[in-house]
Image 1 (tube, rainbow, N blue to C red):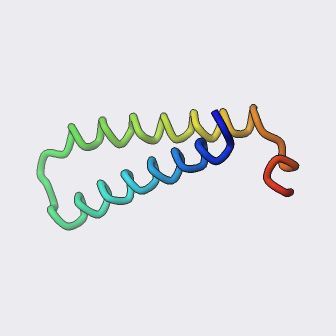
Image 2: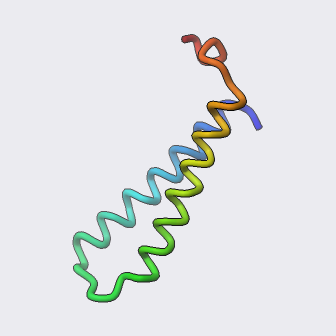
Length: 64
């Protein structure tokens, strides 16, 4: 997977999490277990994506 693709994936994960958090704030759900499980899964994917980036690319690959 290309660096740009991985960064785009990270942006998508973050956007989905932001949307879910905003929805939870606005709707004040009494039962949000399903949302909690989904968010924990997405945070896990996000951490994995960051780990993959760190393992597969060096700062020189992105100009640093």
